[in-house]
Each structure stands twice: as structure tokens, then as C-alpha cells.
Length: 200
Image (cartoon, rainbow, N blue to C red; front, top):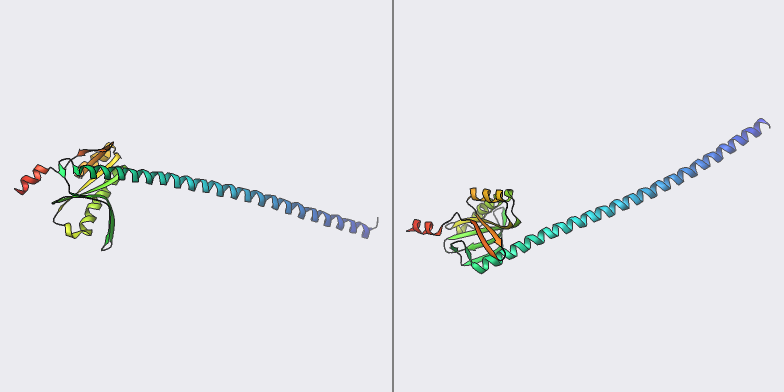
């Protein structure tokens, strides 16, 4: 075989080899892209499932809170009492925005000389107690017409851990548990008789 012919054969084989390498590389890339697409789809489906689960759990939690608030509101509306305190009006989800402050009050009970702000949660954690103290402060600022009245705070819920109750007691907050459709007052820092004797 002559040198020119040999060279031509080598170049032909190398060209064929390059062509085969390109084909194999293209197939490999195609397979990799396919696997990556499948992986992305699986991740997207997994993320969608997680989002749906979060939404479901969040919705259930919100629904439980709404149910607890509804039941407690109905119980307060029926009795219009908190221990030995009687009230003549009750409001729910009272919102106000003024002077850069915005707040919402779950249940507001009033009589001629005091206001009771009731914060409702299905399960009341100890860290939530401070929020009630902030709400009392905000109420005074948002409703200056009621400055002459005494303003008290109460926590109410279906689940009240002992630490939550102790924290609320330390801050002189009323603690109200729900037993079926009835209310059970676990802490009563305000005494009607004491208040009456102070005014006499």
C-alpha cells in the first residue's frame, strides 16, 4: 500500500471515528438531558405535593382557630359573664388602624366601667401571653375614648398548658378554658366586690 493511500485510509478512519464520537456524545447528552428533565419533573411534583400539604395543614390550623373562636364567642354571648363579672355587650374581630398602629381583638366584652379583651387560640402557648399585653396597650392607644375605663386582658382556648396558665397569672390576665359549651375561669384577678368597695 502506497503512503498516500495509507494516509487517506487513516484520515478516513479518523473522520469516521470523530463522527462516531460526535454521535455517541450527542446520544449521551440527549440521555442526560432526558434524565435531568425527569428529575426536574419529579422535584416539581414533590414540591407541589409539599406545598399542597403545607396548605392543607395551614388550612386545618386556621379552621381549628376559627372553630375555637366561634365556640368561645357563642359561649360568652350566651352567658355574658366572666366569673362574677357581668357584661352588657360583646363584639368580635374588632379591627382598628390609627396613628401608625394596627390591631385586631378577637372578643371584646364591655360593661359600664370595664373592658375585657379576650385573645382566643386553639392551643395557647406561653410565648403568646405577651401578645395579649401588647393588645391591651394597643387598645388604649387605638380607642382613646375608653381611657376612663379599666381594661383587662384574658386568654381563652381549648388547650392551655400549665406554663401558659402560670405566665398569664403572673401578668394578672384572666384565664378561660372551654369545657364543651361552658366556660371555666381558671384565674380571676379582678374581684367585683373589691372594685365596689373601692368606689364606696
